Image (cartoon, rainbow, N blue to C red; front, side, top):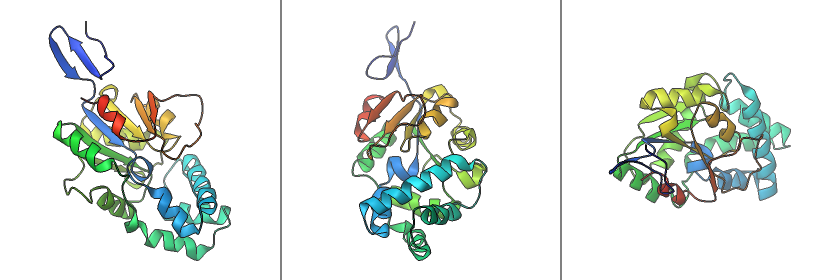
Length: 226
């Protein structure tokens, strides 16, 4: 009988196969350093953190999709950020940049033939800018992109995760979800995906569900997806 080894392989007799056929990423926090942009636009780290926490709370609670840009504006209001600053953030979405190890990790996963997908709490328009940033080093598109706008719901509702899985034609149990924000951990787990939490920002957990693994960088996930 096969088993999961520490290296992420299932061994059946003398035959080894990958534990995961696909990897789905949260876009704005797991792959991209959106924190730096928010802090820069807000004018300081504390102001950016307050705004970002308000934004995360609103998206977690939103459920059915409403305009993503409105959530950014509403979160600014909650955090005491001026309306024109919120408009500046939206205008500067193309300035998003990937984490430093994203290029090597995505490149290696593609080299290994792993399907790659995105599940993001974003409008379609802003997702295009964010995807361009994620692919700034490689023009090859992701195999699946599920936005909250297309799915009709915000994560951690199941619809964005399930949409990405359908687009990939992937089995949840054989698809690793790379979370960036805390609510993605219970959200992706609820649809049957094991979760790797790329918690570079040191966010507190939401609820009692624990990820399979928590790291401060993307690189260790390569040891799970051989």
